[in-house]
Length: 474
Image (cartoon, rainbow, N blue to C red; front, side):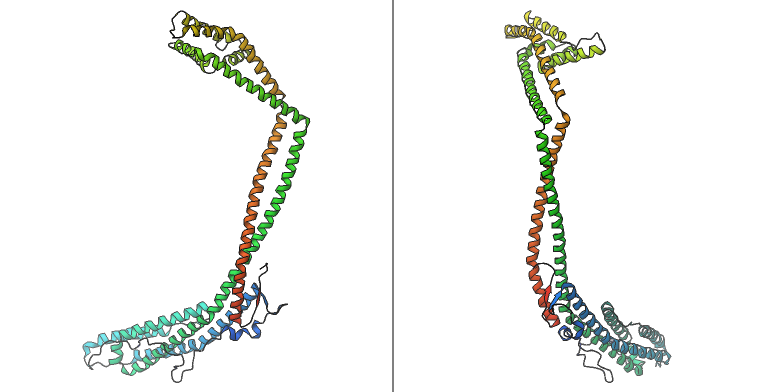
C-alpha cells in the first residue's frame, strides 16, 4: 500500500480567467453582449412618428423594452452552448462514475477494504447524483440567474465531494483521477464564463434600466399631474355650483325679508324682545324688593314644614314665581277643584303676614327690625298691584308669541344656515383649488428637469437624439 496522502480537494476554485482561456477542443462560449448604442440604430428601433426625433413616454418605453428583450435574447443564445457543454460534461462524469463503481479496488491490507469500499460508494453515489442534475435552457432573465446560481452550487458540491474522497482517488483509483479532474475543470471553466457573461450582461443593461426607471418616474409624474388637473376641474365645477347656490339663497332670503309677513313678524319679534326685557326688569325689581326681608324669612323657616320652607325659599330667591304659581293653580282649579291652595297668592300673603307678625312681636329678632317691619308692610300692600303687573306682562308675552309666524322665522333661519354652510364650503374649496394649482405648478417645474434627464439617457442608450413628448405643458 502506498504511503498515505494528506486530504486535499482535487477541485479547488480557481481565480477567474479571461473567457478566452478555453480548453483545447472546446469552443469559446462567452462573448460580449452588444451595447445599446450598437443596436439602437437598427431598423428594429426606428420609430414611426410625425416628427422623426419626437417620442412619447409610451413610445420611448417600448423602444427600451425591445432593446432589453434583444439583450436578453442575446444572453439566452450565449448560454445555450454553455448549457450543452455542461450537459455533455455531466454525462461523461456519469460514465466515469459507473466505471469507478464496476472497477475492482486493490488494497494491500484487507483490513482497509471496508473503509475504501464505503468511500467509493459515497463518491460514486454523489457523482451519479450530480451527473443527473437538470439544467433547463434559460428563457428569461430570472431563469438565466437561476442557471448561474445552480452552476455555482454544483461546482461547490463537487469541490466538497472531491475534497472528502481525494485519498481514495489518488491512492486506489488513480486511473480515474485525471478523467474526473478534467471534467471538474470543464465545469469550473463553464462557471467562470457564465459569471463573466452575467456580469457583462448586468453591466451592459444598467444604463438601459436606469433610463427605464427615469421614464417610469416621469410617466408617474405626468399621471399625477393629469389626475390633479381632473380634480382641479371638479373643484372648479363645485365652486361654480356653490357660487350660484349662494346667489340663489341670498336672493331668496332677501325676497323673504322684504315680504309683508316677514316685516310683521320681525316687528312682533322686536316687541316680544322688549316685553321679555321688561319682564326681566320686573323680576329684578321683585328680587330687590324681597331682599331686605330675606333675613327674617330665613329665621322664620327654622323648624317649619317642608312645604312652608319651600315657599319661603321661593320668596327669597325667585319671588316672581308666587304670581306664576297663583296663575297655574287658578288654571288647574278650572279643571279640577282641590282643597289645597298652596300655590295661591293668598297663601303667600298669609305667610308674609305671619313673618311680619313674628318680627313685630319680637319673636323673630333682627338688628334693624323697624326697617324690616316697614318693608314687610310695603310688600304686603304692593302684592295686588304686583299681581296685576305680572298678569299684564304674561298676557302681553302670550299674545306676541301667538302672533309670531314661526314658519316664516324657521324658513329665514334655514336660509341663513344654508348660506353659512355654503360660505364654509366655498372657502374650503377655494383653498383646496389654490393648493392644487400650486402643486401642479411645482410638478411642472420638476418635470422639466426630469424630461431633460430622460432625453439625455435616451440619447446615451440609443445613440440618437430625441425630444420627449410628455403630454402636458413643460
